[in-house]
Length: 131
Image 1: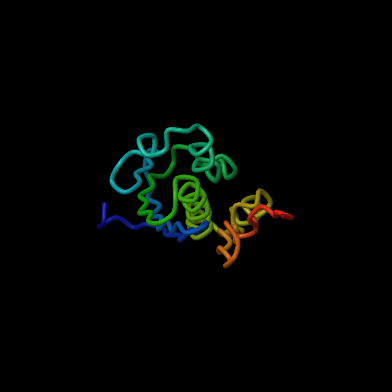
Image 2 (image 1 turned 60 degrees about the horizontal axis):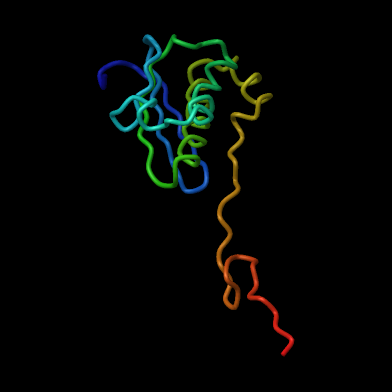
């Protein structure tokens, strides 16, 4: 598929980065060389990935090839969702408004807070003992 023309978008969420290529086709979604159903068994993650196509009414019109690295399964699903939305805007500028209204073009900037010294986690303190 490398010779065909494509539209690209980069999505990010937590520590995950997804590079998305959008080709005209029959609606296949391939992530790191495997079908997305294989990598994302949970329905919520699958819905997250398909959400941009549902909003723009382009389900089954484009093949998607994705390379995703870093993070966990939820972060990767969020990064893929963001990348697909950006690729759709690259394809057709009129998709920008509905995608923006559904919050698909906004990068979710929440990341894990660092652990502080003297604490067990980022904010959890050891139990206080009076005596």
